[in-house]
Length: 241
Image 1 (cartoon, helix red, strand yellow):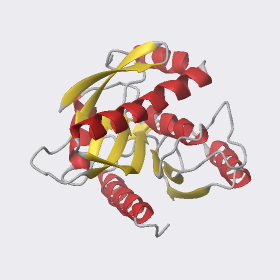
Image 2 (cartoon, one colour; image 1 turned 135 degrees about the vertical axis):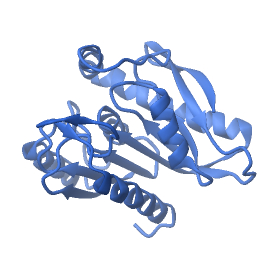
Image 3 (cartoon, helix red, strand yellow; image 1 turned 30 degrees about the vertical axis):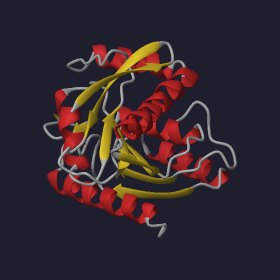
C-alpha cells in the first residue's frame, strides 16, 4: 500500500494505492470510494481484499489530505459541504480516477484499458456522479448509496455500465429516489442494472454497523454483494454486458 497525494479540485487528495506486488502481470484498475468516514484503515483494508490478485485498487479521497472522522456530526457536515457543490464533487472523484490510472501506469502494474469504480454509501453517491459526469470508465457499482443527483445525466452522458445494489427499506435513499434514478438512467440511455434486497436498511455491506431503523449490517447480503460485484465487473470487462 502506498499513500498518494494528488490535485483534486480545491483540495489535495490523499488516497491509497493498493496492490499485490508479488503479481507481475498488469491488472485492471479498481477505484474504491469509501463511505463518509473517509480514507480510513478499514476502507484501505476492504480495497485490499477486493483487489486481491486481480486488481490494482485505489481508495479515493473526497475531503482532502486523507481526512477521516468517527462519524456524525462531523461526517454529516463534511458530506453536506461536498453535496453543496456538485461541480467540485465531480472534479474530486474524477481526480481520484485519474490518479489511479496515472500511478498504476507509471509503475507498469495496471491495465488502463479495463477500469471500474465502486462506492459504498457516500462513496456510492460519488461513483454515480463519476458516471453522470461522462467519465471514460467501463463499470460503476453503487452499494447502498445516495441516489439523487443535482445534475442529472443527459442522453449519451454515461459511458459506464452501472450496477446499483440497494435495500428496499433504506431511509437514506427511499423508493422515490430509486424510481427517479431509473427514469434518469433510461432517459440517458445508459446500460444499467439495479438489484434491491427486500427489507434491508442502509449500510447492509458495512461490517459492524447497527443503527436500528437506519443502517444494519447483513452478512448474507454482504457476501452476495461482493460476489455479484466480481461477476458484474468481470462480465463488463469480457464484453458480456
